[in-house]
Length: 249
Image (tube, rainbow, N blue to C red; front, top):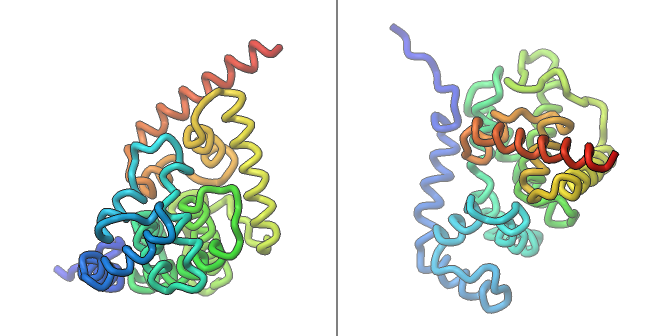
């Protein structure tokens, strides 16, 4: 029986190389020295080694995405002129990129990995020069996803679609439209947060799955959470919104 080619990110040689490279870099003396230099200027980057930094940047017990993304924000502030900071930022968002690679069909896994990683590095550089109110981890993931899907749509000769939400693709918007869409979604997040009296991440879950074109399963995969947990969180938030609106009438 002929073995099927790998389809998930874990089967990509590029992803394996990135993970191997990080294992060597994160605990190296050179990188620990670099971290000390960073920490002298930026307390948010005060860590003993790269693994500690990435663990803090990916923590799931933070009160909000903004709190968790303090480390990533500090990296992005250095990323324009510091290639090492860009590489570390890539490692921070790599779990979400892996879910994106695994969710695309049509290209082989190496082509998918190459496109997603290259696009993510471009987005990281763009986010570093274009600050916004959106949490950077979500902003990097959402813009990488959007750009990769546009590339797939343009490649008409290649039968590539995303597993989730492919009917909702907006293939005609330019970067200015992307920015206005982000602003619109951020306004909705703020409205839900205030109306339902919930944390930012709960409000964002409702907005992104109800109005932003993302599925619960996709966000769960990107954030390494149980989809059912997210569905219950969304249900509680929407229930609080309905109660708040009823009281306001």
